[in-house]
Amino acid sequence: MVELLGLAYSPWTEKARWALDARSIPFRFRHYQPLVGEPELRWRLRRLTGPVSVPVLVTDDGRWLGDSAVIARWADERGEGPRLFPAEHAAAIAHLIELSERAMSAGRALSLARVLEDDEALAEMVSRKLRRALGPAAVRVGSAGVKRTVRKYGGGRKNLDQHRADLGAALDELRSALAKAPTIFDDFSFADIAMAQALAFVRPPSTGLKLGEASRRSFSDPPFSERYADLLAWRDELYRAHRGPAPLRR
Image (cartoon, rainbow, N blue to C red; front, top):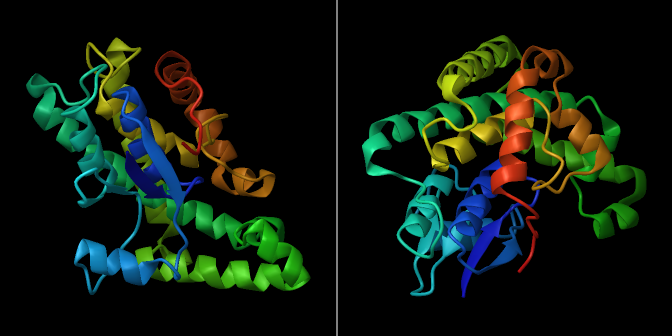
């Protein structure tokens, strides 16, 4: 059985998990431990410098595949179910994957800025077991981890206006692409999965992401939730129709 290494609260991991589930591919889920797990990840992915992150799929023949879109393409060649990358929409899907990445990067930066102002959310960044041991110091540990993530991916406060503009532009383009709802193309595809995850930073879905109450609050953007209520309704219906229950572990 293949193994998916990821973060249960990450929309990037959810993209990969959804693709594997859509193609009915059994897998084990293993929670990635940042910092502790990074040396092995660098070695396996042959990336000695630059940022490395999950999701990563360990295939049944021992390969380590990084990036949710790469994992989804691997899944699309196996299993059964709806094809996620129909050939006739190849160029458009590639564009929407890139648009999703831009939107999610912007949303992450905005979310992390909110986390840094919320002690409860900072404490939730620390595992429950360690949180109990650390007590109030868990907030400082969580803050250090979040600041490290900000440095890793960029997104300081001086860029927040640009991040907000980038997220809004991507969601406006999604709205235009959904003129023929309920899916971007005639049939469900990875484009829908990818763009749905950009909305996790507007309001997280009720299923799919394992978030504490404070973290869910930090992911949410009330003004954008109102502005893009139609897209949130589309996302929620997409989950109902094409996701179903999504267990975090196999």
